[in-house]
Image 1: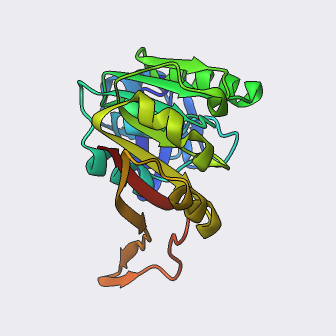
Image 2: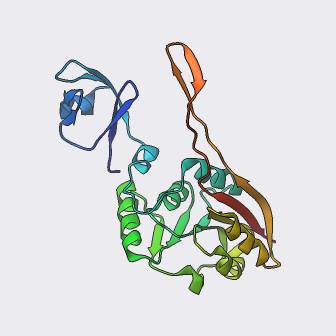
Length: 237
């Protein structure tokens, strides 16, 4: 992985790869970062150190287009139940946030991205994350899906209704199709074009509000993470 350690001072996190770490709280020597769980900078500021995990590196991937948020990714994972035996097709790779999250827990992920620039960004992100089970294809899914017997297909596209027939023929029995779009007209277009062997199982929007605690007071944050996209879940029957 790209980042190996996290150094934390209060609520501030610093990501370390190699060499001495320069922060606004001072400099921490590489040898101390490698060997200690608590360090002090040259300005006498204390930091805690712990190993960087997959999720830490995932949050630091290079961004191109807008990424899917953890609140939506988490619901896709729990709703579809994908696991180490699952084969997944992700369409509309973008920066690769969703594809990488799915690859972290599934057997294999194939992801389609028709824009070459986005595909290059995602490919580099997958390499930095150390993921070996992702195949990225510079391909337009509207032209068809090559893979068969898929456990899950995710669509983050402008016109998902054009993929319904392709998806229905590529999913395994009971497999999931998840559509992620920002507007109701897009959802309506999908519902108006459903094939007989795709059944809606859930349609949701997830809102997230963080809470803060300071000086013995616990209260919600003034702002919340509201609408990011609608999630439409379908299954092949």
